[in-house]
Length: 309
Ligand SMILES: Nc1ncnc2c1ncn2[C@@H]1O[C@H](COP(=O)(O)OP(=O)(O)OP(=O)(O)O)[C@@H](O)[C@H]1O
Image (cartoon, rainbow, N blue to C red; front, side):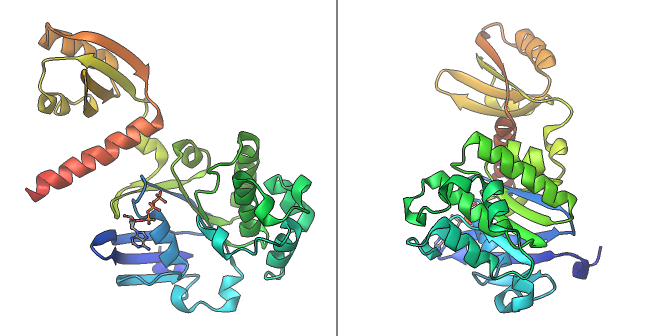
């Protein structure tokens, strides 16, 4: 695909805040109708990426194009094809206006928009339309910001941690709506700490770690065919030796023993018993996607540190 065919095209973008490298030469594209989840721990660079894509901040180097234009100099026509929901959006919202007034005002920026009632229904806000923004709970505020992001039928939507603090029912409703938008061909970039959110919605995930992309691809390729198992145990086998075992995804030293993430617990346990007669306090549990994600970032960091020494 040529760069001009992407709705968003970030090319070798770097950004530093004083001595902190927030982004380090990242490349990121979004195609028509694609849902991309940007994953990473706190401070990985997700919000900085979106801020650069939308032209809120200037990168130190690299080039960015959104809907074929420079984000720092975006035309009104292009703006009206974009929706977004930001983590610290709160500061820019008129807190004394009601939900109804804010959503109506936002709809006014777009030529084709949803009705107020439909926006409220999608975001689960029908009962609080007359409440002032400052009177809303944290979750209701996020829901309203979501309504603002989608109200204008944008072609490209940026959602920065859209469901943080939102109750389960509203989260399900938001996911359902995002799937419908995807079916209609809307492109979505969402950042999330929830792997299940990425799994539920995304065609592709990009994992950021300390400003670098350490994975880009389908979520099933991260997980693999089997979901991981966590073994905790006491062992006299050296950590380095455990790490080099082919069935080990990651190992962490605990206060009393080790925590091993593996995708083949049967084979690994047989090996542990064979090689350590002092093996004790064994406990097994099915790992979450988050455990696997931690393993991925840990392995990358170790690879990087090893490579630099
Ligand atoms: N305005 C700023 N001034 C100084 N440092 C900043 C600023 N904004 C971000 N940073 C730093 O840049 C790095 C990336 O931050 P960013 O907010 O992009 O991460 P994130 O992945 O969105 O994190 P989170 O999940 O916590 O929202 C962090 O180390 C952060 O402390």
